[in-house]
View (spheres, rainbow, N blue to C red):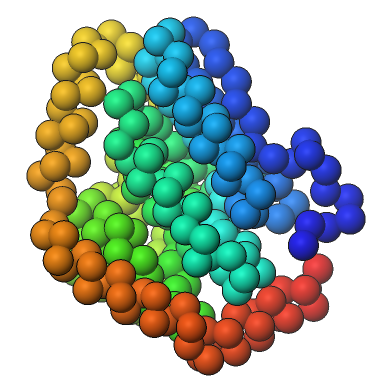
Length: 256
């Protein structure tokens, strides 16, 4: 359910300039959370990027200074996560044939961390922090999300973040490879611009081919993914998940 003061202007915004597409998340008062109704918009925006031969780079940004995104809203996890639209968007983003950058100007939580892992370059600032609360909610994370955590961050960091739900700060985000670069807040825009310039100077065909190869190297056996998928689907139906999500939603509403 959207807040009464939330309008269509809160949905993600796509802009294009200088061969670069930017998708801006626009709910700063709600930590740029992602609602189910945002996902068809995001999929359509991704399709526009895919079909526009004049776009060579995609950049994700979040409004405000506090949070890039808090991920999928709690109510949506309760009612609509099994629609799998979020996963469909992330998997499509991961395999986009253009390079992608995420500018993390603050905190990044939950499913938004997986969105970032789908991007090729992740630029954070000194105030950035992250956590993955799936275990706290009683949710077994979906298969491709786990695969990305392990392939990008390694099994040790993935176990720490997934099994404990702990919060880590910017320096550790850089150390484990979640961040490509860690910069002062004042340098975020110039750093993103520098990476965009470097990407635009490279051959688009070579980038697309190498992205495909790097993604293939990070794949795991399909039978393993199927077994993980079964555990995820079982957790979606668990009483523990429903009870913990309900308690978390109540706690959040009491703070608003």
